Image: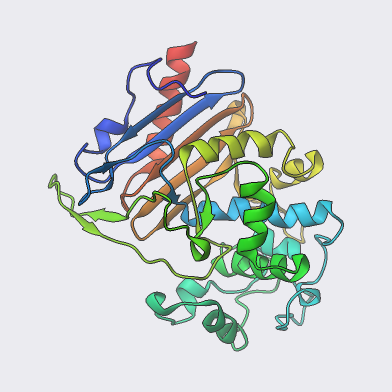
Length: 336
C-alpha cells in the first residue's frame, strides 16, 4: 500500500497547477509503505482529477513491457536471443556483414533507422502496414552490432516477432500474459482501449506562466515501441513483480538489467527495454523515459537499494526526469 499522507507533499505542486494538466508520482523502497502524490486534472474540460488509477500514455516506457514479452518467450524456449530476425519476420532486413538478431533489436544495435524520424510518413497517418511497406525499401544506417543507436523501429519489430511466435496479436499477448495474469486492471494497449477506462487526456502548456493547456493527443496504431497506457498503481506492481523474477526468470531479469555490448566488446548504457545507467559509487539506475503528444513518463529503479520512482504526466513538456531525481533525494532525506 502506498501511503499518500505519511509525508508532506514533495514536488508536484511546484510544477503543476491543480486546475490544469498534472501528474502522478509514486516512490517505494523495498519493504516500505511508500509514498504517492497526484496533482492536476486528467480531463480539464470535465474537471476530472488525476488519481493513482488514472491510465496514462506511457510512450516509450512501453519498451519495458515489449522487452518483457520477448523474454517471456525466451523463457518458454520459443525464441532465442541470437535468432536472426528473418526467422520470425516476413521481411528481409539482412545486412551484408551479418544477420540482425533479436538481441540487436533489444539493444538498439540493428542499424535499422527510426520510422518516426526517417520514414517521411505523416505521424497522424502512421499504421502497421505503412511502416512495414517503408521497411521493405529502407536502408540500414550502419552494420548490425557496430553501433548503439536508439530506434523505435526495433521495438515495433519486436512486437511483430511476439505476434508471430505467440500466434496472437501483440495486444492480446500483452493483455493475457501480463495485464490479466497479474491483475493490472488499469493497463491496456491503445489498439485495445476499453471505453470505460479512465485515461488522462493529453495536453501541452503554452508556458511562460500562463495556465492555458492545448489538447495534444495522437493515438497512432503502431505498437511495441509505444502504445501502452498504465496507472501509478499498476506500474508500481509491475516493477515489484518484474524485478523479483515473477514475470520473467531471474536470469532474464539479470540480462535485461545488464548493459549491452557491441560486437567489439564495447558496452553502452542500455539493456533490454531499459536504460542501464551507472551512477558511480551510488550503483545503477534501470528504467525508461517516454515522451509523446500530451504525455511524459518515467519509470525506474535504483538497483543498489531497490528504490522505485514513477512519474506519469499528461503535460507533454513535464520535466519528469528532474521531478523523479529531486523526489528520490527528498524521500531518502525524509526516511533516513
